[in-house]
Amino acid sequence: MDWLLAGFGALTALLGWRFLVVRKKLVESEGARAEIEGEEHRMFDFLHLLGEAIEDERSLEHLYRTIVEGMEEVLGADGGGLFLTEGEDFAPGYLSEECPAVVAVPAEVKDGAVTGWMRLARVKREGELLEELCQDGKGRWWKQGEEGLPKGVSEMMAVPLWHGGRVFGVLVVTLRSGVFSANDWDVFRSGAEQSGFGLGNALLHREVHEKRKLEDELRTAREVQRVLLPEENPDWPGYRVRGTNVPARLISGDYFDFVDLPEGQHGVVVADVSGKGVGAGLVMASCRSALRAVVTKAAGPVEAMVSVNEQLFPDIREDMFVSAAYAVFENGSGRVRLARAGHDAPLLFRKETGEVEVVKPGGLALGIDEGPVFERVTKEALVEMKSGDVFLFYTDGVNEAENGRGEEYGKERLRERFAELAKRGAEGVVEGLPRDVKVFADGHSQLDDVTVVAVERV
Image (cartoon, rainbow, N blue to C red; front, side, top):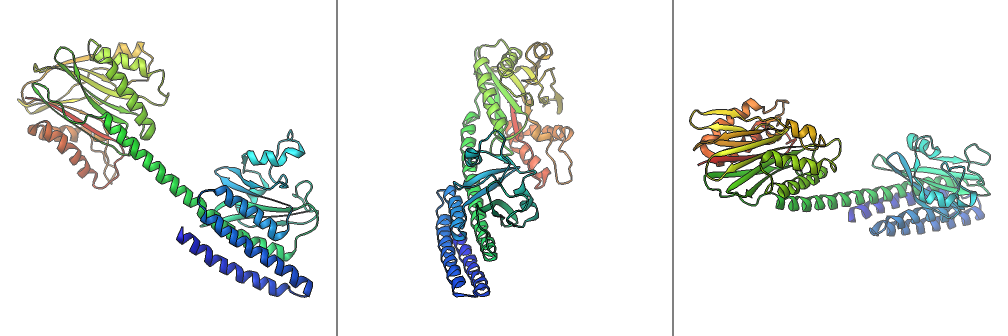
């Protein structure tokens, strides 16, 4: 806050100088001198209170109140209000007891309840009198008899509060009777300028604080999510298994898992939730829980996928889905049963020939169909692995990675690189493929999560 208070001090000095210039021009009699000296005293009291309110980071509401009541006191106004610009709305910052209806109030709101209603309501900015001030960036002084004055008000002044090229609100003061002076108008605009500086910096400071707090919460969520991923690679007889996940954001919509099954079998699942961020991460956690709950009871991978779909469909948003590949490896035999729920087809490297096969059983993504269609189209593939063969499961963050020229890594490049890396076994694939994708991107931002799992028959 030191830099904020230093800036406030500099503007206060400038405002004080401007106030003295105004005073010098207007002092024409002892009566006027006394009146302006009193206003000057009130103004510097206001600046002192405004500085304290800015320094107090605990309550923005206190700052709002200080701005409104301070300007009322300086100008001898009867009512006042601060209306904050929040998106397309005006939101009440602080309104004094006598603040009139300076925004549109529904006809059913009785006169005695207007201020109370405005203190709770958000009003669309479009078409409002105060919005015109925000658009042209200038204040306005409504004098007696002019169109636009609220009911029961003789005069009104309003100024948008700007700072750093952005309007944060509109400050209003009113009189039920009597008139404001030219000096009042100059003082009001100067006070509004100082208030805009304080308000703008306080709100920006809060935005930065809240952003940091959110980032801290996301990092905590990321650590929790990491717990859901395998802590280490499993040791399965007859296989060497490796996996990795590289999130594009703090929260990943990808996941992979290794599960031990009855009768000497082992499961590998790789899934990708549509979208990114927190929402995708929550669906990912639900998918993992659902799958772990059914795999040990299911007769095979297709039955497991059907059960997971039944659990996810009622709770998943219409614009979201989950693609998944689930394979069951028989302990030591090399037999693999695979189901694919709309996921990119896994690749199988054959050491004997050096060729790469695409294993592509039919299947629909999870969460799209309630059940009958999903069950009908989801098929199982049976594969026999020999020593040195390597299975690759991946998410589309690999093949859809882009470089600075907008070119995709692509499935053909993926097959070629997999064929080379698979000669070094599962470790070579899981270590080399994400690195190769990163080199291809050449500094271009990672747009999607990258998950790679390799299973080698030893």
